[in-house]
Length: 83
Image (cartoon, rainbow, N blue to C red; front, side):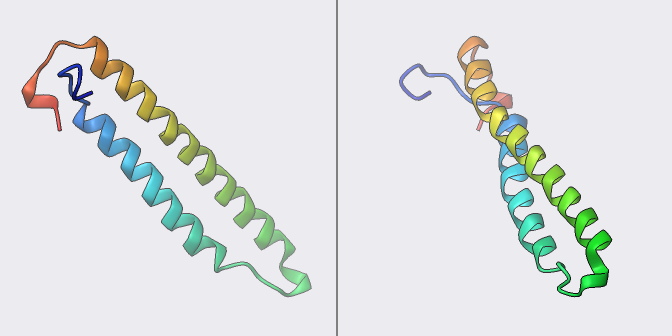
């Protein structure tokens, strides 16, 4: 981006970073709640579903970064919405 004198969108960058690190932290915390007892399978299944949904949201957050690059290359330079 520096070679082309273009800038990334601030809100797309923050969305990417928030979904990446926030999702990682959420998965790490939720993984600590798994139950070892045999009677807790329903709880573990629900927890697995929640973790899977968070991981899918994190993947979407990774897709935001290339979108940000394309957006930055296509837009005209505007210093008030850049990093």
